[in-house]
Amino acid sequence: MRKIILSLSLLSLSLTSCSTVLNNLPYVYKIDVNQGNMIDQTMIDQLRPNMTKRQVLYVMGSPMLVDFFHQNRWDYIFSSKKGGEVREQKTVSIFFEGDQIKNIQGDFKPSAEPVLKPSTDKMVDVPKRDLEKTLWETMAGWFGYDDSNDDVKKEVETAQQPTVMP
Image 1 (cartoon, rainbow, N blue to C red):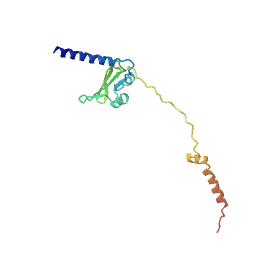
Image 2 (cartoon, rainbow, N blue to C red):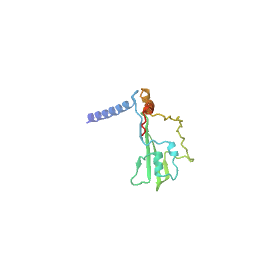
Image 3 (tube, rainbow, N blue to C red):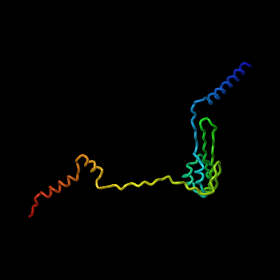
Image 4 (spheres, one colour):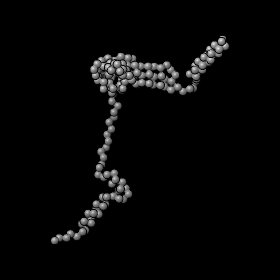
């Protein structure tokens, strides 16, 4: 009986030591794992009291959890584990009264002042297009099939035709 207990304890020690060794091997790539809704302080700063659910959806995205029994509570959860490090988790709960924000709880707190998101749009001046000829007419002109020459030929032919008068 002692031999069985000794062999089982040795087996369990060897298995745990293997997992420790395998988890700490040098030069082994460990991926970053991100799960849930990406949450950052700039998103939370855009939330204001009395915002509607639709506006919150636009700023924050779909909630990770919508409790069936508490329809007025949306939970946003973000979990991040950088290769081999300890997992970090951030949560934000948004409470609604009717269709408007009542309270925000969690790891992030909204700022006291309204935050304006800077625009990243750039203006570009586009030169005006010359629309005298279509693309097909321009390409046909490259190969000598220009319709403008045909118009000149038609005018010459009509001028050369005899006119009959009664």
